[in-house]
Length: 576
Ligand code: ARG
Image 1: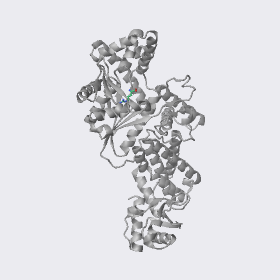
Image 2: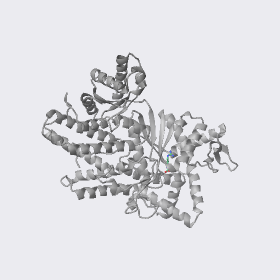
Image 3: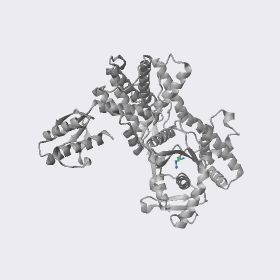
Image 4: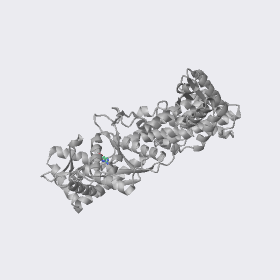
């Protein structure tokens, strides 16, 4: 039972005992006490006056006294102008603290029995991952962990758009201009090499626009299964996959299942055929197939080209059908940038028209663009920031900041190096995830690593600080515990209250598909702890019981920080 539920039912009992009226607990108005008053919860007395037939103050006082006498969790009360401010007892807070301590650092809400698929990253295979993919990956991975912690079975997936015009362009340029270059022969990561081919193709097309016809011919040959085209396609895609895997590993990203467009586009074409039969689609004289969405306020959408090849949305139709059928999904979240809002609107509409009832349970987690300030990594307007470069830059920033502070100087080199990675990634992940996904944002590497700001490293540092206090305590033979009868101060109660919000924050983040909720919560907690520790030198306390409780309190802070940051994919080192 939560504190609210308890107070509501006890207050209803009070009304019955005092005034002989039976009222449902749910009819009472209870809110969290406003900051300017003393108390934890406030009962609004006015609606009860017609039952008590006395003044607001007398009614509030009578109920308050009854609660103190009959409910051990209530420690005191005051009445201000018809509002009964209730203070929970020290015993209530210490038992809360004990139960938070028991839960540890991996908090999990009860099972919902639901299965949710989360698709993220979903790159095209013609170029390396960039800053936009980084935001996508971090959001996707974090939302997956959050939904899992909120009691769902989560399947993390990615869609690899490994066929189509884009990859044919890279293949074409490679054939014409790269003299058999390979990742081995050039010492380049495979995704970067294929990306170079794509850039080269753009130049070729500028010089001679008719090369696009050759590329389209290549795509037709690919769909016809031409062995030579297929072999080149396979080879270059494999280079790209190896490159992607390295980037994912460096970012700490993984998937449970990978879907490839070449596996599902035919299912899409099958749906196009069915849709034509059902009258959902129409065929133009040139053979192209369309879905008319004008009556839905959109326009005509092509689902198959006149040469019979499929377009971007064709594969999504097939992929969605396969995923719902194969995995018995309750819902499906697609993490894709807001430039594709229209695409997903159309996708849901077409799937609904094709008669799939699950179409309404598709959610597009649409996020805004992320940019870097001009400077080292972004020199010209419109330069794409490469994900691998960015990860290395974060490592370098973490190293420079730590070296300047000298804090890690006495650690062995290997340990330091691991820390630089953890700090660099922590900075990157936190800075991106603390922003509401919908908002466009600027990622500033230097600001993200500031140990004193609203940053990942600030939270990592706070955690390491707690670990260091607990280490010192343990060297002195002191163990965290919550002894009976110990009375927490109002500052301590404030922290316990904040700690007890974790489950509701996880639920809120899951409902809103927003890791920012947990990032900001962790920041508040870290700030509160630092303030508390500044005022309360925990280890200097002479009262043994109080000291043990304080150790339990700070250890609970470190657990809750860990729980929250784990859901953002951020590691919290024990030393920093
Ligand atoms: N590969 C696409 C791109 O790079 C994104 C795919 C998003 N996912 C999807 N199911 N359509 O733009």
